Image (cartoon, each protein chain N blue to C red):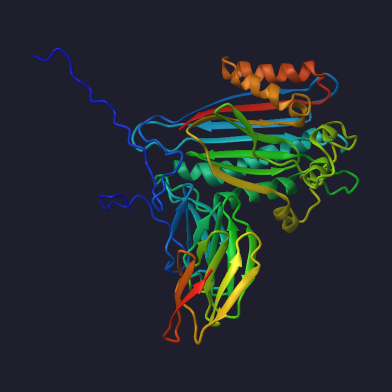
Length: 162
Length: 295
């Protein structure tokens, strides 16, 4: 919509869009419960590419250095190259990922319903560390001054060093 | 009585998308007319009997109420001479891609709602190449047609590329020439692995061997994996150049840059690039497309 509230364009996915879009380099990235991550031209809404995961995408993407990081209910965190729409890597957890990832320097952080908070390196998706909470992690992390803050269904908020 | 009406100045308000407090480097200007101009040459060269290169260019610009965005489609295909009917392969492939892309991307823009492409544009381009590959397949296994293909689609200020082989696309912007495709050649793969320098690659006896091209014999699923696709926004001003190896293989990038930096018309630059390749021996077919754009 423009600032006057008029609809400039609209794009229809196959199911609900609960993911929060991100715009980078004129490209809007958003996930849908139809299991797809969409890249749309931000000015026109025309679809540029789509990337199919195996289950709904509730997580919101984060973009850095030409790569979008986003989780799926198929238990995987994906790194998708913006210019090609192709997967650079994926990392499998043991639970659905509804948490939206956050970045700090060269690492990506997120939670999973398997109860863990994960830190992976951005380049290859290798595990740096994982921290077990007492319940599912649906919350999305916030990172300030080298500390990852994230909540868990176990009623706790955790502060973890990056 | 007013002696003349004052016409208000157009106020250009760039469309800026702020994200996380960052301004994009190149805002898309509305109010200034977008423009694309194209020039091309396609020549048999000095030593080949037949021209096995093909090119295709299409530019659409509109004006008036709710103009559709500028659209350009530019294709270079280089038929593989060691295989039979390379000239047919490049012609069939380039026209098949053009037909599919214009049907799926351009025609919807002309409809009453101007809704634009319904399928993701990168998928349309890959489908086009799959169809082109199918179109050059010959039922006789003794006859294998082959061709490179590099296609650039410009839609508003976004560039989409699909590419297989060693024809190239370059972007010329602010005095710099940047290749936006990677050759699917043995020597490029050796360079990427650190086994060859660019100077060694230029004279390597197997520099014409490709590991990726349209050969008509790949099953569709394999074909999908074999094409490079790429998208990026274009700067407000610049030039795109697509060419076959008959140009880049003979004319160093420094010389191409000097020609593009020259003050002549776009067609004069295309002519100069051709002349440079002919003067360097012209031992292959030579094709060049130049697109000058302003958004």
